[in-house]
Structure formats: C-alpha cells, structure tokens
Image (cartoon, rainbow, N blue to C red; front, side, top):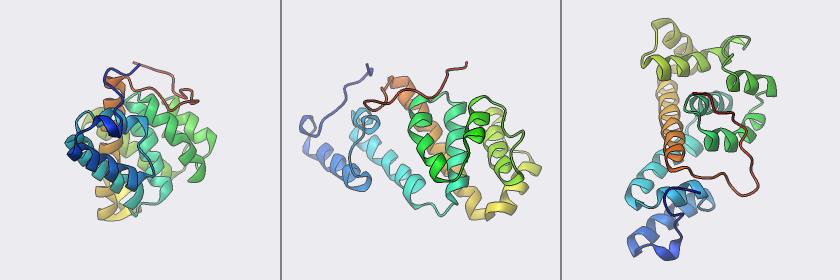
Length: 184
C-alpha cells in the first residue's frame, strides 16, 4: 500500500483538478504513479511537464531513449518504472537478452557499440556522478549535442520518478507483477 493516498480528481481543490485534467489529457489518463504524486499538485504538474517531454516529445531514437530509461530504472531499483517500460523495449526493437543484461548488471558488456554507448553513459552518470571524456564523445558522436541533453533529461526524469515511487511505495498497476529483482 502506498505511503500517501492515491488521489482522485474529486478529492482535489479546483486548482488541483486543473492539473489533474492537464495530466489526464496529455497522457490519456492518470495512472497510479501520478495519482500518488498529485498529493502535491504543483510539483506533480511540473514533473509531468518534464516527463511529457521525456516520454512523448524528445526526438531521441526510441531505442536510445528506452535503453536510457531501463538503465536509469535499474540503477534506482525502481520496480514500477522498470516494469511498465519493458513493453517499450520490445517496441523499440530491444531484445530480451539486452533487457536481461541491464537487469542483471552485465551491460554494457556484450552490447553492440551504439547500445553500449548509451548504457555506459547512464551508468557513469548515476554511479560516478560524472561521465568520462571517452564515454561522452562516444555518445555525442551518436546523438549529437542536443541528443546528449535529451539523454540527460530522460535519465534525470526517469531516475527521479523511480526513486519517488520507491519512496512512496506506489504499487504497480492492477494485474502487473514486478519484473525487477531488488538488489542493494
């Protein structure tokens, strides 16, 4: 059970309902993750704006974006973000073997160079809090300067979301089972 109430539109102030409506319109509904975050409508609205860009608007190749999302979710032990984004991996052409390598902390070993560039960049950023020149240049040659910024936005958003949902103990959508094994 979540540590905060799962809000409903009816339980919110008129200003909160406006933010609820914006999230619902942009995402086709308000999932449990945002219903929990909407305990603070202004913060949730701003997070949803960033998430809307990261999820729907970034021109990053879907494969690059999904590798960044899964790596960030795994590094945060974020079972909600990891589980709900696995479908996107298949849609982006990412094999089950690559998903397993990220899940089991084996990646980027065994990945092709482009996939390894993305995973290595995210791992260095989240584990070392910096990115080596070689890793930075490898990814920049693949996605360009604007793409680097987009990767940073995607990683920042999904890593924050994963940590937030873990701290709040937000349960997965009904019928979904966690696809992530916790590892401290």
